[in-house]
Length: 304
Image 1 (cartoon, helix red, strand yellow):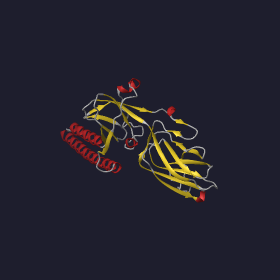
Image 2 (cartoon, rainbow, N blue to C red; image 1 turned 60 degrees about the vertical axis):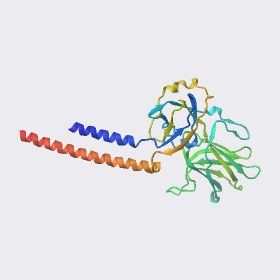
Image 3 (cartoon, rainbow, N blue to C red; image 1 turned 120 degrees about the horizontal axis):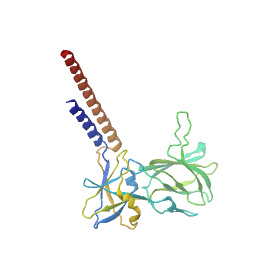
Image 4 (cartoon, rainbow, N blue to C red; image 1 turned 60 degrees about the horizontal axis):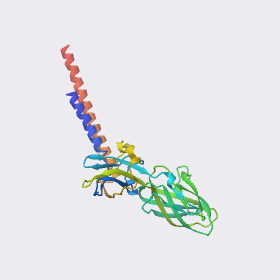
């Protein structure tokens, strides 16, 4: 009896833990007409829905069958610059951000607040600025609002990258690493010069592709948005060089949320619910175990 109850407890905990770790997002893949390998572009919209910045929580399914894929990222050596502007090769444009420009006159600085709709992977920012014919100024980018002070009344200087803004070429900001940004701040040190006019800012993500083998007349879905899930280990990863780069693209249709409430709120609610349920079951189990031990001790005393 004791063993059965303990087995039930383990099943109960594992069942609800599994339910709390479902993929939060899924989308249909466009149906293919012929069998073969296809490319799926990992757009900024897809990366914004992943929980792990290294994209390890992406999966492709055909019914309950998990479909193997491999990831192709453009190496840094392919990125090309010239003396006047950036030749954007192998980049994907991120949805246009909302920009707010503030003048910090006390510190002779221009603060550009860049707001994105989602947490996007940002690898490059291209600025379009207007001002006097010749200008050259130091600037930096941060993810923390520089106008907000800490408890010691000091401004934060958490700089992600330092750079120079010059009239000689279009300002380009390179960001490195697997990060997600919903808000960024660019600070331009004007010193005693007039502030520059910000006309436009474009954000880009390095191009990422999924390579997978699909069959015609089958329905495939792509899922993502699961916390703490590791990269799948498919045999296909050993054959990257054997698959041509000229294979056709396939579209990802609209994503839908697998959780009715918003992901963050829903996740917290689910986690707390299962936590209290698990605690309640543990209390019942411990109470039962204590009762069983007391009865067993009483029975042994009576036998003596």
